[in-house]
Image 1: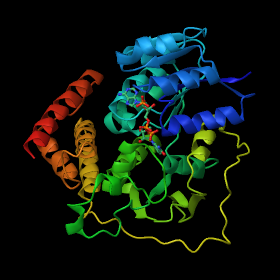
Image 2: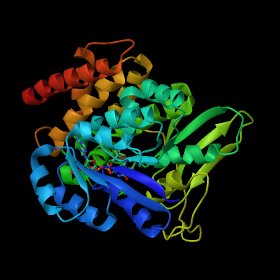
Image 3: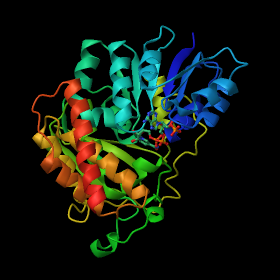
Image 4: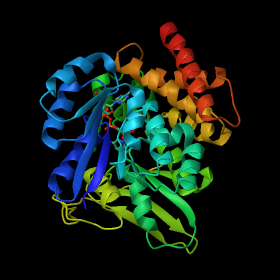
Length: 384
Ligand code: NDP
C-alpha cells in the first residue's frame, strides 16, 4: 500500500523538495493534500500533477481563483487556517509533512498529533513555541514525530540502535553569511546579503534566521524537546562546511556524527522512509574533493540572538513563544526594509522584557502570548 501524505506548505522550499521525492517514488507515495498560503497558481499546478483529494489555501483571498483553476478536477478546494487542521485529520492520511513556516504551523501540528498521524516535522516553530505541549501530545496519542530539520535528523540517525542516554548534543552551525563580518559592519548589511546563505537554499524567513543565528537558537530549543535533554547538554559548534550535520556524544566519550552533502532531500526522505534507507539521486559526498573540516565557537556578542534563545529556554513558560513572535515580526520588517539587520535582536530582547510571562501556558495562552508579542514588536518597529 502507498504511504498517503498530507503535505502542508507544498509550494515552499521543503514542500517542493518533498514533492521531488514523491515524484521519484510515485509507486510508494501518494499525495492526498497540498496546501499553500497565497501562491494559488503554484498550488494549482501541483494539484494537476499530483491529483490530491484536497487542496487548501490558508489565506482566503485567492480561493475563487484556485477553485476556478481546478474546476475540471475531482479535487476538494478549501480555504482558511481551520481547513489546514481539518485535512490532516482526514481518514485518508498516514503521514503529515508539516513544511509550513512560522507560528502558523503550530495548530496543524497539534491537530495532526491529536489524530495520531505520523508527523514529519520541518516546522521547527511548533517546537519552539510549544515544545512541551507538542511532545506531550505525541506521547499521549502515540504519534511519532520524525525530524526533518537536517541537524535533528542527524541526531536522530546517530541515535538509531542506541539504548544509552545522550551525554551531549553537538549541534553544528554553518555560521551564516556574516560569520566573518565585523560587528560594526553588521549595522549596514542589506537584505540581499542576508539572503545569500553560503551552503543552503531555503525560504526567506529561515535564511534570515540563519544570518542572525537565531535559527541555531531555535534548533537548540527544538533539540531540547525532541530528544528530552537539558539545555546545558546542547553545545553549538560552528562548522562552516556544513558537511557534519550534527553529533551525539555518549557517556563513554564516543561521538557519533552524520555527514553528507548539504541537501535537504536526504532528511526529508529519511523521515518518510524510516527505518529504511532508500536510494537517492543526490550527489554523494566526496572525501577526495573535500578540502577539510573546521570548527569554531559561535560569537554570541556579534550574534546576540543565539543567547536570547538560550535565555528564553532557561526562563521557560511562554518565553520561547514570545521570542518566536517577536522574531517573525522583526524578520518580516527587515525583509520589508523597515528596520536594519541589528534591530532584529534588539526588538526581540525588548519584546521579551515587556511581554507578560506565563509560567505554565495552555494552547490558548500561547495564542494570546503570540498576539501580545506581535503587538509589542510592531510598536517597536514603528518607533525605530
Ligand atoms: P518557505 O517560505 O519556502 O515555504 C513556506 C510554505 O508555507 C509555503 O508553502 C507557504 O505558502 C506556506 N505558508 C507561509 N505562511 C503561511 C501561513 N501563514 N499559513 C499557511 N501556510 C503558510 O519555507 P521553508 O520551506 O524554507 O521552511 C518551512 C519550514 O521548514 C520552516 O519552519 C523552516 O524553519 C523549516 N526548515 C526549512 C529548511 C529549508 O531548507 N528550507 C531547512 C530546515 C528547516 P506560499 O507559497 O503561498 O507563501
